[in-house]
Image 1 (cartoon, rainbow, N blue to C red):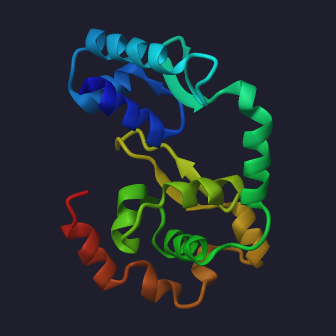
Image 2 (spheres, rainbow, N blue to C red; image 1 turned 90 degrees about the horizontal axis):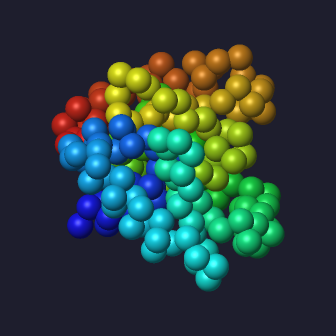
Length: 179
């Protein structure tokens, strides 16, 4: 059960995570976390796996197998070229008007999982992830490149920004959510 939880966390995090952070999130002994991480490494780190588990000092990350680099790069190039999809535009709009915002808050507003969309928007340089030491979850916000692309000096120049940034319905929804 612990390995399953760690596997899910590493998958959705898509960045290196310290054992200390995993211990805090799971409220479990650090030795148990390390043993489970080793089990995952055994499960994934072999030639016919598309995913491997990397360890650098105290940090662990689930990544694509370096042997598949060319296929992954071709996929990513196709993902970041072309126009934004409707879900990407919706997500970017919510981040623009409600940011900084956590992924669960964003998903509460949109009603769908936004992991891949956020990844794509970050790869395009439109959204950035900001670590918040006070909170467990990072927040997402629009980038300077996004502002520059729109020809804006600030997000407050977006249409109806003051009215929508702290809209009563959104604030009430986020305050009542279990996130």
